[in-house]
Image 1 (spheres, rainbow, N blue to C red):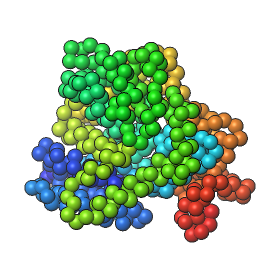
Image 2: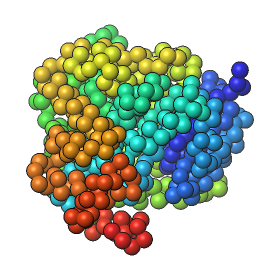
Image 3: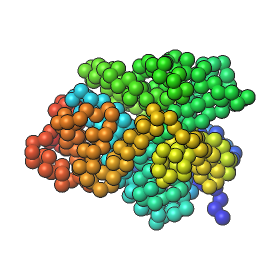
Length: 466
């Protein structure tokens, strides 16, 4: 039997890695780790070296004998891994800037995991995940994959349903933030509140009960527009219409703002776009600041500034998940996993984001039961769109990609939607080999991104050529 756990993190040069290290250090007494491998690609080597050095300092400041390895060779890292975590971004932050700016240049939302931008993030990410699964099947066939590469729900569905890797859990920080922050707004403690979540990644609702089993969801709805009410830092806090929420008696996640208040969210995004301050551009500046902090040879802990990133607490959720599986904890977590009838309005093999019990066998979803027409209609539309996105990402079917655009509530229909689709295809040519033939055709037709910032980023990548 092996002496200790081997963890591999793909996307190890991420600014979130110090949080992952902090979470593993905190849990070490019950999670005896032997080695951690941080893996990245050549374009991310500088960041990998910076954050890897910080990770080593963090472990050196503990009494634990854990070896940290940095590598650009994924296969070398994966051999005999027990847990693999994925937190990579194909195309780095420049790809996210392009995802946001091109749709906004046409007057549409280009949010990272919603709308046109989220669709293209899936197109880039899912094929890479397929290559990772192929390597894992050969090199660590018993490993658990803990995914928080976005769009997490769709990536997890591709892994489990299409690539056949059953030992996979998809994570998101949004439920974690809600459960961390909501109790205080009604002067309660987390230990005295019982949460139930149901829906899809970045499109779920939840209910809350007190220690006597009384439904206190309505009390929390009254505070949902408070500044510390549980909305992640990366979502503009347009005010939810309380009458709608009281009618549903459900707390929507922060991302519902893009669907319930589409106009207000679009106007805010367009105002940021006009100033050259899309969320992606803001995050590039935050990340630059973080890596300057990480370079400090006296720093041996996670800096507080990391919480400015919208994905704060992702990594801590990953640590909790690993801890629950390794130690058969049977604890409540909100994860993306196989539906198994938890939401009867969706297929049993769909991936849903629901309250689950995490143990050595993985996630066991808790039954929610029938949804009312409002929630059911939204979920069925969003899941159908996700299925189109996944199929297009795997097959390279342009028509299927256009279907996904047509279904997405945040993408306008008609010629303008097709223009955005085509510009994004050309912009991300280097990361979309499955669509290569269509992209060549589009380029022959003269399709080029109109947004000057996106065009400049593409030119830099291509040695001066768009």
